[in-house]
Image (cartoon, rainbow, N blue to C red; front, side):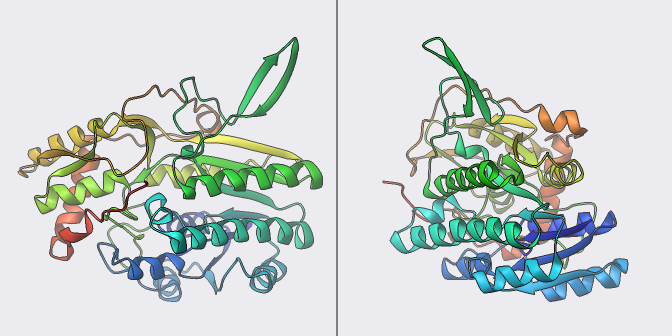
Amino acid sequence: MRILILGGDGYLGWPTAMNLAAHGHEIIVADNYLRRSLCRETSSEPLFEVPNLQDRAVHWFERTGQKISVAIGNLADWTFAAGVFEQFLPEAVIHYAEQPSGPYSMMNRGAAATTLNNNLGTTFNVIFAVKEFCPDCHIIKLGTMGEYGTPNIDIEEGWLDIKHKGREGRFLFPRQAGSLYHTTKIMDTDLLWFYVRNWGLRVTDLMQGPVYGMETEESGVDQRLMPFFNYDEIFGTVLNRFVVQAVAGFPLTVYGAGGQTRGFLNIKDTLSCVKLAALTPPDKGQLRIFNQFTEVFSVNDLASHVQRAGRLLGYDVMIKSIANPRQELEEHYYNPAHTGLLELGLEPHLLTDNVLAGMLETVARNADRIDQRKFLRGVKWA
């Protein structure tokens, strides 16, 4: 297929591009380097240096002979977005092109405005570009399990059947985000659902949990091809941050009671989930929602896993509870469904001591680049 990957420079976008190119698809990636810019602005650079997109595409071609085309520009700008869609006419578009950090979105008004304008402006342009240039195109949008929040009931896979005063209906599962970033993802879903109903778009919304890991089958240990690996409080996901803290001899920083529970997945499983979604598009006029994760852990669970794996490798890993800067429940019920992708054939990579050992060893090779000042940045929700 012709597949357009928006946000193709990001933590997930670039690995997705390589994975789909390796499976014979024609790939173009588009990005405006927003993540790179925000990392510089907030002193949140990744653990190891990442070549620009053009250089990454050259390295990939030299290694595989497979071409990944690159377009640099702002997808929230209609002229650029329309030009990319009109030129490429994708059969599927994978939408990662959003400011991805909850903490960043809560820093101040400017950060909130950047998040709101980029995320919603890009999604809005994607919808209209598909309608105008490629109405049969399958939109695959990376949502987040954070849209659901932590309700005191089981979380279904996107939809909820309701009986009320003798009548029945099917509705999007009620959502209650914990940051402005997650709120923009809810707004994305609402925009897409509106235009699915009105224009008959075909959309898959992947409610993804926090992702961990860095090496994929396509990147191997070639750091020129590896994704952004942030370990700071602003852009680093919790498990990635814990692994770097363990190598640095810095206590694993657990927010509050540590009972915050989420669904997690290995970066390799993100690639599998997106590929499965792309190869099995929904019908026109359908918003299909999958909950994209493989295992459920509390923050305390993750800290204990990293501590055990680290000590097996000789690291003296300590765990420390600190004041929680976020507005969230620290102990709560959490039971989300996630059968859809498994039924499509997902074979999960589970979190084992061997997986953590591999992450610890990769980080250790770059230990001289760890800046411990990045671990705690003081971003508060209230």
